[in-house]
Image 1 (spheres, one colour):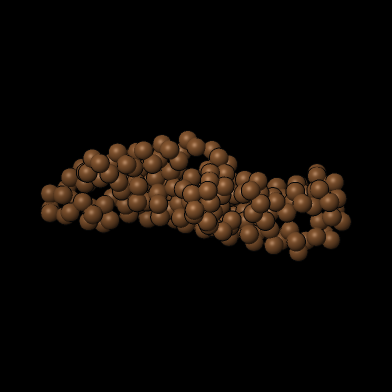
Image 2 (cartoon, helix red, strand yellow):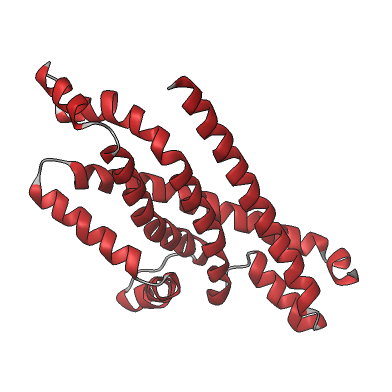
Length: 214
């Protein structure tokens, strides 16, 4: 246990990097996922095809492979991105495919009759989506979006493999130095568990509040 106590500052710096990475990756996933969800439910066929290809590609490529491609492949093509930013971009790309599907599921949960009624009174596609469909669909999206957040949090540990100094990376460094794998990784696991449970609790509370308003 003295390994944790003696290096608590070092580990907490890793926790901060993990949270920064998770938040940036999740916000990017929300923005991209929302855009491609609109593509997928929109009336323009080429955009629906682009949305489908995007989702299938990023939902089925392993995040570690994506990290390696971006971090080691892009410099070969003359594009250099800082390590931390590369990891955040990869998390956003991977998470956005799942955000897109969560949003599409939420949108599909709204009665078709409501969209038809909104179009009948002259609202455009964007107005129907923004004023009628999305506000109702959000209630069904809360828990799936929380699950995506937890997925991004846990996936951020893969950034350790490419050298981002987040929690898992720093835990590995301590293990190499002190050979205390059980204690070190128990601490890291407890931090991930605490953040994931907190996110789940916030999501559950938000879902209940929205359900009361229904």
